[in-house]
Length: 203
Image 1 (tube, helix red, strand yellow):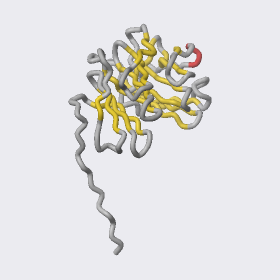
Image 2 (cartoon, rainbow, N blue to C red):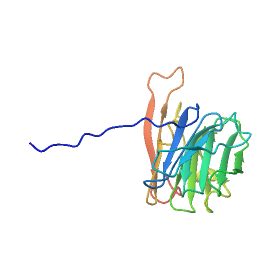
Image 3 (cartoon, rainbow, N blue to C red):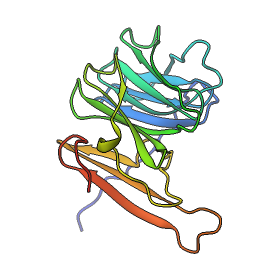
Image 4 (cartoon, helix red, strand yellow):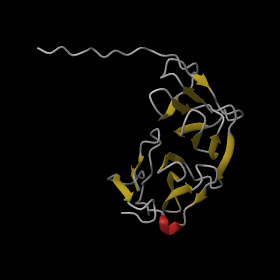
């Protein structure tokens, strides 16, 4: 019989006590993670060592998703209030607030990029439509998409702040998983909405 090499795991110390939620792997050496208490950590040696590069003054924020371009540049997204997007270009030594959504009903769940310039982030529905913002310059500036470019929600429906995994970008397509129910609903909603043209139209 052919022998199979046993795979083993080795516990690594993150150096932080936060609940880590977001993860972005750049390559076999570089990865970033984000989480509660304004926490961001990164490794540049394949996970052997992690550096705390948290956002100063953001201890009340929960960074549920992160997208890293390389070891120096990354974008993070906070869930809940205030709903913010930060960006770094110096490996996390400094973070700059790029966007803050003014509506207290917004709750951002996920962040993804089509390429190094065009990205999209989604929030639970606001005013009966999924809230979407986009960037065309690598996360430096963000704008809310007009209503006609945002999917209508079904009753009780929301996103899932599941470490950014409820939204997936593949090529020019974006898929968003939605679901839930209000207290008086007998059946929950569960569906996937998708766009094949970078969020111009949805099915």
